[in-house]
Length: 265
Image (cartoon, rainbow, N blue to C red; front, side, top):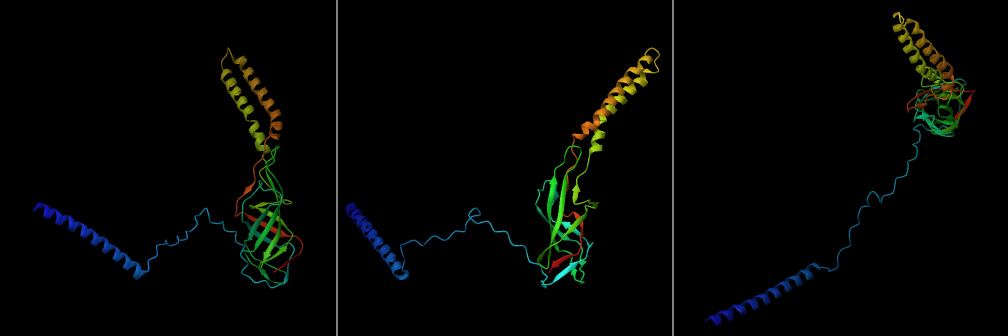
């Protein structure tokens, strides 16, 4: 009896597996037939390049003026003054030939009655510069504002910078602080301190009968130090530098037109 049961179970397992294999194959075949399954893999999707792979965007062009050029020529009267605001820092670090931009803070009228509005762009050139020098001289920038963009049209102009940062400008030189006398005062500090100390010592000794006669000694010593320092201070001050020049963006300048200037626009 056990042998019959064992044989029956073995045959059942064999036929069941065979049936399962046939069943799976038929399902697989039907799926492939009905849905036209392709064994080949689809192409990989295109990936978005990373930041390191993207190209750096080019600098956009300066936007054109909102005003339309008339194609005419206008005359700016001699002596016309215009207040400008710098678009970048102007300092004694800038080299000769550097271009700097400005924006008109006020409008002005041409000889023909046309108004050049506030916001008009100007451009200048650094014609000379130097860092603070010995002898107490400060840094220096020589600036010439020689271009105007009116209605998007460039014109060369001749002007003089008359004021910078609320200070008058002589010639075209914008100067840093000259510190010769300030440096001279600093150079005199050791002599002053020595003289004051010896004078205090002498004033303490003077009321004492035994040592009052010696009070003159520290006073003389302090006087010698002070006089020596006084003689040396002018020479020492020659080898010290003046102040640096740095005018931040937004600093106001005033220009004055030299002669009559023709501008296009």
